[in-house]
Figure: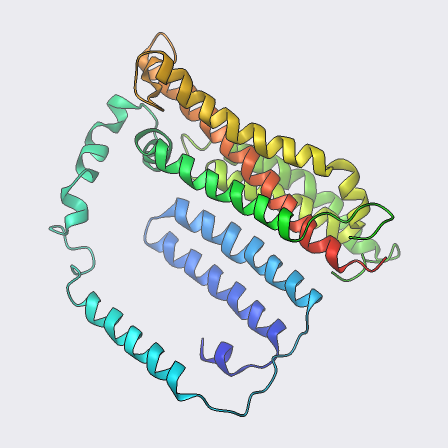
Length: 162
Length: 145
């Protein structure tokens, strides 16, 4: 990540981000979150890298050097980062069994999803059956993103102006 | 987008030709096997779209556009969206909650299976269509006429 900050060649930065996504996917696999790893590898390392590359092809490859140093953005970023780090102090420790996330509905899902939904993959059961409404919202987000990109960029008419 | 790779780039063309059918098959496997294994509509849609991206990169955007026209993509994305909502409304009109799959079939389990299958299918359709759509929108801007 330090290399990403230091590098001026944006192509190398995009490649490093792709590698980072794959590493994150491997990390998810070791955490037994295969579905998340799948998504990370396909979307994070695949499509996102590609979209960044095509944006690079449309613009320039090298970052412009700025000699001016600005203090206020640094202060804002530092204070927000410090606040966020302070917020994590209240979080439960990693794999703490008494964490709130384990006490709420997760127990119900794990114990009774086989009887109620009958699907071996628990993630699918939660995503599409228990939380079907949320997934509808996600799908709407993607659909809206597609419409937005079409409205902004549009298709190039054959043999005409864009 | 740089111009498509020249016709003499034989190795890349052959490799892409050999790779694209397995990628499409794998996308369908992830789509319809999401109930039992990892994966589901989102991942399957992205993998399906990546096959089109590979094809367009190697063989040129024009040929890919001949298969996936803008109208087809728009219709697919909208059908996926509508299918999801229709499943929800179907259970709503069967005296159950919105997106409650229990009432979609005679047996409760069958209803759940049917509901999950249909919603995953609609997710896959919309995600694949939108991803290809975004790719084309980006890629075609760069092609100098």
